[in-house]
Length: 390
Figure 1 (cartoon, rainbow, N blue to C red):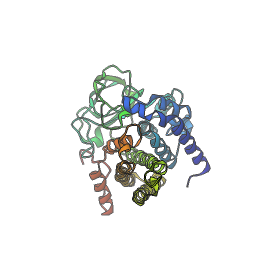
Figure 2 (figure 1 turned 180 degrees about the horizontal axis):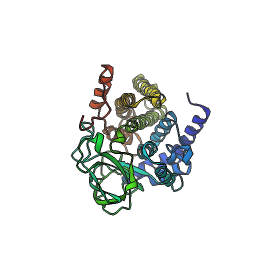
Figure 3 (figure 1 turned 120 degrees about the vertical axis):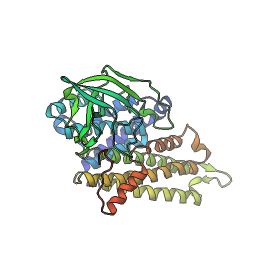
Figure 4 (figure 1 turned 90 degrees about the vertical axis):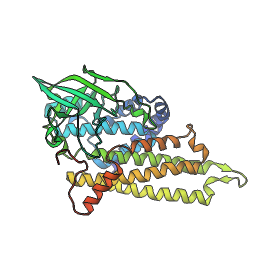
């Protein structure tokens, strides 16, 4: 149950989503462009600062409220929800690892100027679900750091003002000792992209590959000590937010199917499709499964702050796994329930299916999640991601 204050926040973002964000979703999807106007809508109501502490002018949302916000936005636009979650997770890293000066500077970029931060970890030759390894190199050069390497799936490229680039210190292969996150301003020399992003779904996350060639940033652009990013229990929150996005997409798709079934009248019965027992069974099955995934998501969010890093890994795996499996089933069967019209781009069902199928490919994979859940059940210790050097 939400408190009155939490519910007021969720009601506000629900209104913004229905009135301003959802109506733009198809346009951004077709253009494969960053949802800039939707970001600005959320900025005006403070939601870009959802994870900025109140001491720095942000909303400082607790995890249950934050997950509710992301889930609500995803009902109307999966791409806006995903990009805001990526940005918000960078805010969590800054809060966990940043110095007081870094927090004042970077949080003000968001609260005073409405800027967004991307998080770029994926690389062409590395599967993060197999091993957490970075080949992008960062080296010290006097009073600066220099970044070289290639990143794939660079969400919010050409849209964010800063990119949190996951790097390995030059010569380091054990990420527990060499991993370093460097906040690189978008206008830094030495950053290039071909801008290619033509995917099945999540098209408006605009995530092309980016090459860093001698990109030079000040020493205070690095967050924390080497390896610290894997020890603060923040990387696990990526998965929890993904689960909220998947659940929100599925909720939006099911709501569309229910509304369609109520309004669609067919001959010769001349009654709504909703009266068909087969449709009722399909809707009932999807509603029951989705309710189960939502209960796990809510329970996970409620337990998050008190959980240690290992427990967060298990909680995140469970929430993401269930949201993945249920979300894929819901968005697929919704098209079946609606029928041929469900495949039309005039309706949101096919976009929900494409976005869900694409976004659930994000690590950890289903196999890795189940491995982690199984280890926990068997009493075997294990983190959400395997770190090189383990």
